Length: 313
Image (cartoon, rainbow, N blue to C red; front, side, top):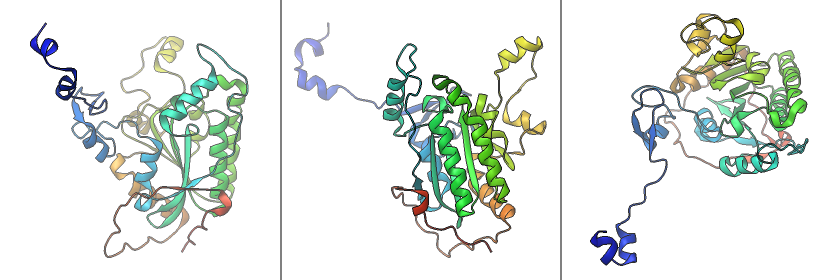
């Protein structure tokens, strides 16, 4: 026993106690380096020393893509929260409730409509923090609604994929979203609007087997894990050792499965350039003095209320 616990009054002990936020530091999964959280956040969640790309939440991703960090939140259709009344160790309804409280999202996908370097675009982002970004009925409806809005507004559709696959708690209803989203992509393609997929870490399972691999251009972030089945399952099936870097973005680019691997800092100008090329639009001249990057809360609107897209040149 020391004199602090014996003598100092409780109120004084509370003053001496330091409270440290849980997320003050981030440990780099690649090098083990400890980095100040604010430094990583200001660097778009890329570890400054190792260039390791951390997972990025849906809201942070939309802020990094749209002009002036502003966009319209697209209202998504309501679906049954627990269609099969599923229960394993916990009730599925409780898991959904916890995921919504933790992430602030209704489901694993968030969709925004706004300007990308002056041109209209619809952007869908899968958030891995919401039950592993799994594809369920709500996520499938979100992708289809985003594709319908892109068709309606005659604008490109960009999806940031991050998922562990189909949501097992919804069974066959989850698997049905794979053909539904595929039909939605074909619907957009018939209007000759670009469909661009950005594969982030990780993108696996049923998402890879559907809309995540149907892009006109397939982009991947550095080091992203991309595949259908896991490497261990493949090795046990074929009874062979897989090559180094198998299912990583750079390996897939070398073997023709991915068109380009783009650093997160270069994603925004790359996407804007691809949208201009694929829509044959002229580049928007930048203003003499760039507008300040002020975060404005997104507005929640239905597709009919979204402002019309800027006409193509």
